[in-house]
Image (cartoon, rainbow, N blue to C red):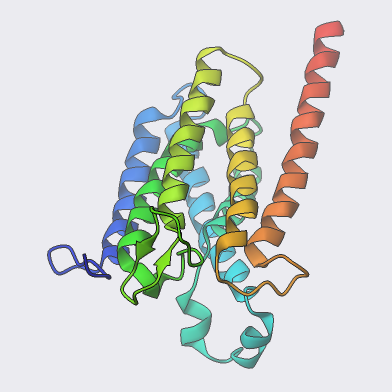
Length: 247
């Protein structure tokens, strides 16, 4: 197998990124709770999440190598070429909350995004894997049998495949909780974010990216901040629910 692995002459990253957006949006329209939010307002939430994700994914990428970013502050190609999933998730969260304030919606909408996000991210990671070394999402060299040679004779951790497996497992667990009707509205999304951010905090230790923030890279630092926020949020929601029960 040669990397990048073109499909019908189309670059795998371009193809699977387009599929991730298209299929993820279709999954959202099909699986969203129609009674939770009307379609006209849901579309604005999607717009907010898309814009927020686009901005967040770029901004966080610029912090991967802050010195290089400063040196290339006027290089449009450098500033526009990279993006990160964690930045997209956190930026999308800000975009959703901003959109909800603008349209006057107060109920949680996050649970509707869990499956579309997971599906889109898994499809996107297939493209990352098939792109090989050019995508910079692979892991460090390994002697494990599951190591993959992306074309330079060195076997590396296929961290893209690890992420797909993790997301699949996470979705199974979350939808088991959904069937049990445990928790509160918004809990599935909160646990999804907690789980994924913790995974990224750990998996990035075996990625050959700069770690300029003590022992962390930009993704890990953002993940850690997100984890702390969601631990606080889940604890607060749990306390609120207990007060409601005993009220």
